[in-house]
Image (cartoon, rainbow, N blue to C red; front, side, top):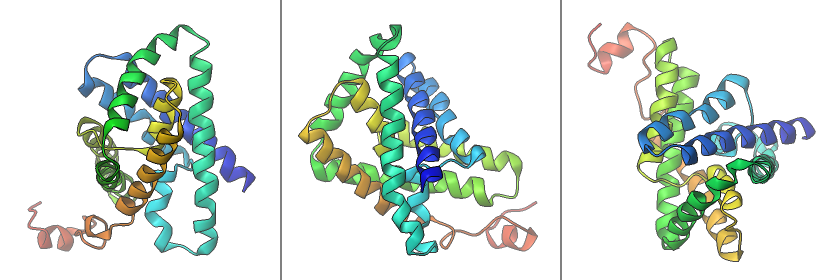
Length: 217
């Protein structure tokens, strides 16, 4: 568990760096593109990110499920540590933009926040599963980048990214904790929805699968 917790802290940290980039640029398309550094590092280095790991909870045993709260807490520690460290530097200027983002997130009705979180992890699952199973190297990374860019540009709710924004924006309160928990449940629900996963899609692994999908080589 100790190794998992430390890995989760690192995962939270790289997601926080992605959030830092997003806050630092005016163009949201550019920001969403570079935010992907977080999930890219998580996948390539095998780090423990809650929103990615929860997607596979039903594919594993109870011991795996028991690691999810540890991963969530590690992600919280990692994002918070980076945000607090940044507030000791000139990057504290990003707090104002983070505050605006937090106000928008916390003004959403709870059910709306839940739905946006479900949609977010549908995109995360598509990205992570695409990276895991796509036989083409380019396809692996396109899945990651498109999955992340889509959820950010659509305004979907990612609980780990929001841990960073809430800390950077000084927005922690009972309301923020409630919203974060609702978003966490929404992310979990979206992640385990196999309607958008490998059981509902034709795997692009060979010529027969490609033809079944109506793709000509």
